[in-house]
Every structure is written in C-alpha cells, then in structure tokens.
Length: 330
Image 1 (cartoon, rainbow, N blue to C red):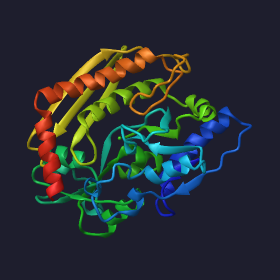
Image 2 (image 1 turned 30 degrees about the vertical axis):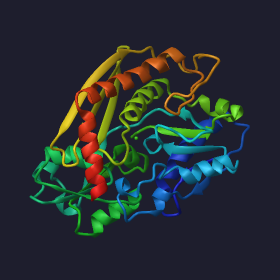
Image 3 (image 1 turned 120 degrees about the horizontal axis):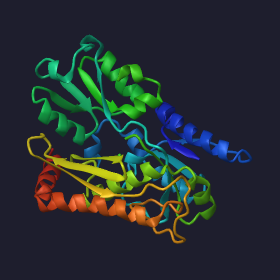
C-alpha cells in the first residue's frame, strides 16, 4: 500500500493511509499490510503554481507506475487529486466516507480575530487553487491572491514565519486529519487499484461509503463533462437529503468578475452498505463499485452531465476558454 509524499510531506498522506489500513485490518485481521511512502511530481515541484505545471497526473503518476509494476497493490489518494479520466488499467476501487468538504482560512498570528472582510486593503492571501482565488476575489476585491505551494506544514510555516501572507486558504479536512482544528477534488479519500485485480477490488470494495460514492460520481461527471481541472476555476458541491441528490456547480473567470452557477437535483436511492450490485463492473468516471446498484450510479452520473450541459449551454464554455487562455499567457 502506498501514500504519496516525501519525508517532509508524508504527515497528512501517512495519516490518511493509516486510517484506511486500520479499517482494512479490522475487517481482515489475518492480513498483513506494509505501507510505502513515495514522492510524486506534485510533491517535488513547489516553486510553480499547480495551474502552470501542465501535468494532469501531478500527484498520481509515480504511484500508478508502482501499481503497474506490482510494487504496491493499492494507493490512497485525496480524491480531488485523481483525474476524472484514469490511465488504462487503473480504477478507484473504494471511496471512503467524506469528511468536511469545506475550505478554511488560517490567519497570520498578527491578524488573529480578523476576517477576510476586515483584512487591510491589499492584504495577500495564499492559495494553490485557481477556484478558491477566483471565488474569493469576487467576494473580497480589496484583497490580493498569490500562489502558495508545499505540504500543510510548509504552508503554515510560510504563513507564520514570513511576512508575505496575511492568511492562507486550506482544505478543512486536511487540517482536521492532522489534528490542527485550532488553526481553522475535499474531504473524500479514494483508493486506486489495478482495474483487473479482482482480489484487491474485492478487498477494498467494502470501504465504499454509498452516499459519498454517489455524490463523488456526480461531482466527477460534472467536472469531466466541463473538462475542468487545475487550469480553470470550477467548483462543484453536493448534498443528499430525503432521497434527493442536490448538485451545485459553477465556473468563474480568473479574477472572479464573471461567474455562472446552477443547481440541479435528482431522486437517487442510497443503498444499504454492501448491497449487491450488478455482475458487470464498467467504470464510471474512473470508479468501480460492484456492491452499489448500477441504476443509482448511472443516475448520479447523469445528474453531473446534465448540470455541466446546462452551464455549457448558458455560456460557461466561453468563460472557461478565456480563463485557460489567460492562465496559459501568464
């Protein structure tokens, strides 16, 4: 089993991997699990914004090579790091129960007690996400946004020790997993395996959280149909209530001035844990889930595609095309 990150960056990756291993050990007490820490391109290139690197598998390529060579049997990822189209031969065999999907603001010690709204004019806020920067630029035009890279420890150290940033934006789930709640793609963990390795698929399939799985299928279908990625500001959020899956998606220009957002819903039955699904297992947005009824998965995928189509028909493609062009030009 592998989790991404080098010696300095493994803290969160190791915590996430350990949580999956602990669950598997409880389910399969007779099995032994070895954890191997590895570095990825995204871990190593820290002086360039994610949107400028131009590599679609920043946090997965090296891990997938290890899977392909049978050096590891499964890899734990933050689901947001996994492209909506996986390379041939790989699949997401499990999606664990999602933690908080929200972003968190962490302020420089001298600004404790402030909010983004009350930060001084031209204060610099760090983020590695074009989506976060565009959304916040629209709401807080008096602030400036700058790319900040590195693992959580590195970014928090840059915030605390340098005078460059007044605040940084991080995923709340990562802070919570590290036990740093007091400092407060998102939220869900995915386990990637070889698509034809039936034994491993069966092993990890019990980790699927049905509601999180269906929500993530809808979200990934939306992103895939929009061709959203690190180079454009695209956001998606889901909620499940009374048998209805609500999907909200939006696109923004780089400066947040132009935006488009819509919400759609669909009736989707969330099955009981480990309810038998169909015999076949074609992937949906890179995910294999044999123990979840195919009908529910297809309904979630259809919702994501429908919302993306609605936005594209209303002019989202132009906003995204301009955002890509401007991002490439800078």
